[in-house]
Length: 403
Image (cartoon, rainbow, N blue to C red; front, top):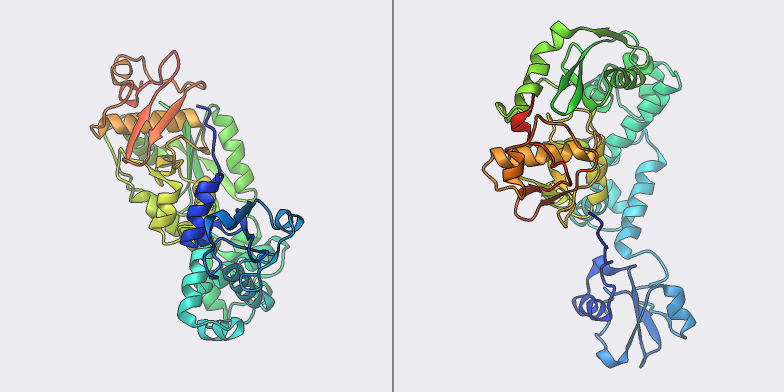
């Protein structure tokens, strides 16, 4: 379904409303000039509100200047918003010396705001706390050093870990495996895997000794295995259908509607923010959907919508972490790592089994065994938490009738 997206604050009425509310979210989207003073400002400027007839709106600061207006000295519309400036200074202080661990008090002194205000502002803009940001930076530095082949001890020190024990405590979260194994791109690890045909095409399930590290869908089992080899380039990959059979059975039961939750041990890499997003995805009830904005709100970072979308896209374990239940704010399906037709079929089947009326319920219940259609056209109503599926001919089949 093609949708025309209308940018926020695209009309003068919307802009005036944002101005009267001093909406900080509108900063940068437009500027306004006051005819009686010859000054132009941001929408959130704390200066006295002008009369409507004395206001001109501009898309850019340069357009306002070209019309003869000068920058407001109070809100400084030519620079970054004050909140972003504070966060940028905080990030610069944290990035200046990766080996130094700044406390919140030290960081707040460096940027000249209170610790309480900095903590809330940083989390709202960046999506994680300053402490989590530092941990993520250390993890990134460690991964980069190990990729270059630096020995583990040297990489630990350079990344800013106070001691090897601290590094090894965080390694499962930051690396998904032991540092030495990561340095060798999985060398020394044994990854068992198996693939099988399902109602959604072929599924590949892979596991280390600690748990499931991959669940992926595709149209070709060989292509799925090739992708796995790329992710674990130097690990020992062992195709073992018997070992993975119980896990594949859970996937198959889910697709046939006899299971709504998974009982799988997972061994996956996750940053602090990504883990929060994945935990939120697991809390979405079966048969319902949420928007990316909803998830951002749920993890306490309402402005981190793109980061939420990135976390969904990086999910390595389909179904176990149900990223297919996240849709666009308007209800349309967004991208899905394993293909939109699969996402459509999953949402439609879950909606039926949860007792939610589907737009095409009667057609779905008379459909042939599931075949994911490449031309499926699907929408989901995220606002009500209900999924709806609609397809072109032939209709998107329901998982209840899987072969």
